[in-house]
Figure 1 (tube, rainbow, N blue to C red):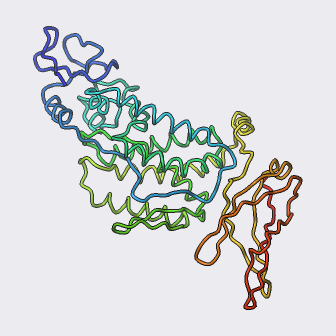
Figure 2 (tube, rainbow, N blue to C red):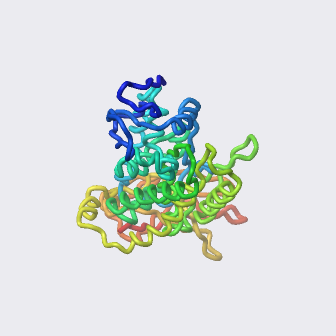
Length: 388
């Protein structure tokens, strides 16, 4: 980055750093005319920021310490807001790639830099709007491909169910408030830091906190690396998210303040904010706009692949399970793949549901029950359950 020299209209102790075309205000009592596309700092703050800009460090807010593959609860409505948020993050990342050598300056202007707020001389260079703006924009900036990939994957896994519960409008407000709360917690716990903080996972941590309260016993398929091997384990949500929170607390306690890396306290602050906000938002009645949107986003089919958990009756070779359908599928029929455990393995078969089935209708799958000592095998009966 080329730093401009002092111009004739600038006082001797001021140097300009071109960061971004927003118009900061001049410090009170300063002399000279300030051009609106520059930020002005005296020599000591220039020395501080120059070292940071040339050898950029930034605290990223990320959540991928453990890897969820999927959860067991499918949302009843298409998560329009969640998908839009993921799309906006991707667009912001593409914008970052277009910045080239100016990306570092963008991180300082649009990321949360605590010293911008803690030092009166620096904070005087910004308007109130410019001081609040990074708490929103930092949620959409990421430090690299793996950073945005991890964050968006967590948002994809957990966000749809929280949006389903809160409704589209309330979920959007909830997400943004969690992100702002996470930024404020990071600011307070790193008050004099010169390092910009970026990343969506302060807000995503809030979504995870809400998921913990709303669906504590949901099953999370989790990828666990064990040395050079990978193991898939299905964990209850309260264990998965509880373990994740413990990692954040442990890491936050061991990490010195004011260094680059992961913004652990932003995660913790966002998570706690999510626990609080979801209870408040769950009490707030849904708006008419949200109810209208649900008519367009309601899913008309259940998952094509359904995992059956069969149960058995004493002295009966037949086994029983439940298959879920929507009213539309029950009326017009459907084809589903069902995964049925047989010993230590699972068998996947195609099931054709005839049109006109009712709640409680039982579908008989011949020869898929238990086998006795004489070689006789019972049947599997799937009871139709129609979603509301």
